[in-house]
Image 1 (cartoon, each protein chain N blue to C red):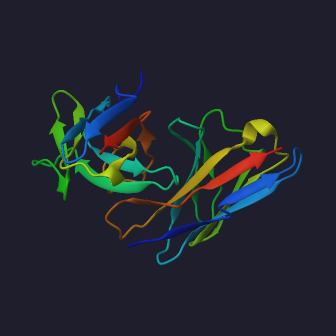
Image 2 (cartoon, rainbow over the protein chains, first blue to last red):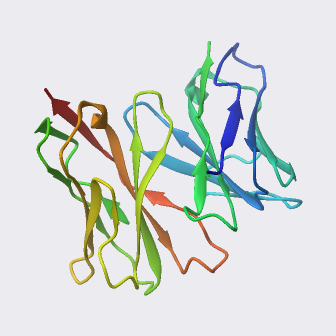
Amino acid sequence: GAVVSQHPSRVICKSGTSVKIECRSLDFQATTMFWYRQFPKQSLMLMATSNEGSKATYEQGVEKDKFLINHASLTLSTLTVTSAHPEDSSFYICSARDPLGVYEQYFGPGTRLTVT
Amino acid sequence: AQKITQTQPGMFVQEKEAVTLDCTYDTSDPSYGLFWYKQPSSGEMIFLIYQGSYDQQNATEGRYSLNFQKARKSANLVISASQLGDSAMYFCAMREGGSGGSNYKLTFGKGTLLTVNP
């Protein structure tokens, strides 16, 4: 089946620094990727939809200057949390759409970000 | 109004018994898709089952079945013969619009934490 990877799986950074999270589709070309955020014991909230070669579409309330998304190729999307603060600590999950796949979206294993 | 409602924050079931996890949805789009995902403590989202709005039969995947009642806008997940490994968070999600369309966004419910007791 289709595999989506995320790197890193865990990251700890200091307040004020930026951190980049990568999402890769390993065995298919993903024209569309999604970024979700999940706080402890809560649901997944869609942050943005990224399409290869174009600007990401952010959901209402998500700061586009803070959460920079780049989908430079059909297999890679990146989320950069700029000037991170403790309230940005969360579990970030990406998913990728395989146009030829059965399950529509394939999820990565997630990245746990802790900002100290 | 919430688009996906899961009213059971937590559920307990005895090993080998069946359990039903509730999900109701709200949409005015005639074409939509309903999904169930399992999220163990590791955090990965595991796809379980899918039901399209035009599907005539309830979806089944091994021990998982979806009780789709379109008029009631409910899509309950039934897990038969529960196993200890089924203990996890379960999310119901909806995609509005047809699968051939350009919008593949998923809206998730708040989830139900299932605990299987030995």
